[in-house]
Amino acid sequence: MKKQEASYTVELALLMPLVIAVLFLPIYMGYDLYDRAKQSSVSGWDASFCAEEKVWNMKFAEKVLEEWK
Image (cartoon, rainbow, N blue to C red):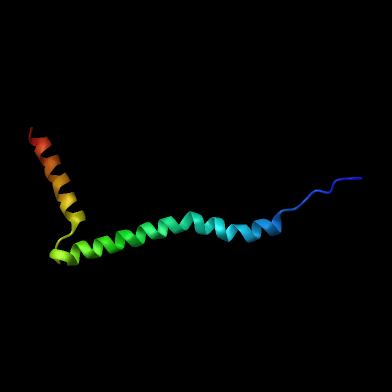
């Protein structure tokens, strides 16, 4: 009696959406959390406050101070 080789194409076709969801769901959730935190930090106490701009300004000031030394 010969053994027949199996093809797992159907099983993989059923499993791939689950694998893709497991891979991309944390990325989507992280982006959503970032967006919520960004909105709440901006609208929470100062509408003109931008954390990214503050960090950029601080790094720029550090570079200028290093050049003066």
